[in-house]
Length: 299
Image (cartoon, rainbow, N blue to C red):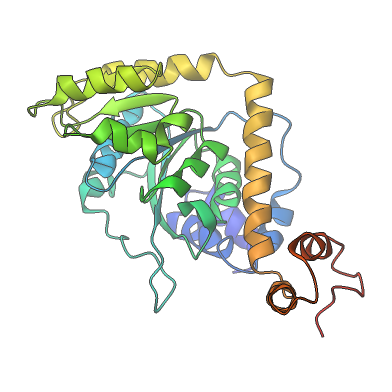
């Protein structure tokens, strides 16, 4: 099917067509799909909630619990799980999403793994476009889960509101999260596996590092889930145009940086700087000129 046919099928409820559209926005046909969607609306009702944190914190379990909570409210929910790219195929490595298996037969839930494909920040360059597609298809909520591997994960704040950082009890976890920059972008902090020893100490440590609201959760049992949902909804109600503009600002810079890394003349400019033919400031100016500029066109 062509793109208009895929859109019609997806609007008719075809998860296969929806999956195909999301695949298309991961590759070179992204602009074609976005053009078929038409201009973005001035306002959109779709909500984007981001979850990040270190490996093993229970992000997938937390996402699965949130999916269940929002489905009980009657909302259509999509999950975008941003995974490390396979060094061989470029595809998502964690596509099975075993912890979310309970929702795979629910027609009101879409679970999709996206490969990062080298994009800075662990967020696939396709995520903003995927959210556009899902908004067009009348999904109410998108949960974006990132790989959670360090400093670069803070880019999730560019697309999500709120950004939730999931941590677990353990010696020094709060300090490590602060060093990784995660606390700087967290709108909500969640100490998962709070039935383990050290949970309250982790909460106290976090209070010493940040003023961000801190919640405790046992995602596997649903303990603390209602309080988390209420905190998410309360945060959403206090969103402002200024905060939305700040997220758009960060998103533009993130995608621009990714495109600059793949610029066809970057390697040549780097060689010129290394050889002393340019200084780094001049090279940066040349890199930011229009692609049609003869001074930077590929030789």
